[in-house]
Each structure stands twice: as structure tokens, then as C-alpha cells.
Image 1 (cartoon, rainbow, N blue to C red):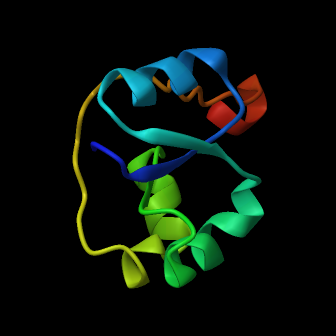
Image 2: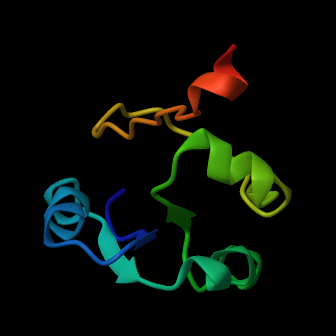
Length: 84
């Protein structure tokens, strides 16, 4: 990632992770990411695969690297009536 601009959400931990591999962290609103990739404002993003798919980032981003550098858990929460 040396010298590459990587969009991250605001987080000191993510900033240090990106810097530790030579990248340049760019804090940016999620709503601006597609256009930033499209116009070259950033070279890549730090996102779960679900975001890449739902936001169609694959249209403006050629490559994907799975680093497993973090964990994002999802919980399915429903009431008993729905579950039954």
C-alpha cells in the first residue's frame, strides 16, 4: 500500500493500521466513497465485502485484498414470535 490513499472511517486504530503498511489513511464519509474511487481521490477502501457489493464499488475498484485485519460481527435479533 506504499503511498496509496485508502479511505477509512474515523478511527485512530484504522489510521495506524493503514500507516503501518505504508498507506495514507483518508477519513471520509461513507456516502462519498463511490465517487472518490471513481475520480481517483482515493485508491481503495477499508470495508467489509457486504459494503463493496451493496454500494457497487466493484464498478470503480479493480482489485480486492482480503487481509482479515479486523473483525466485524453481525447479530440476527428477532422476537420469539418471528423466530417460531
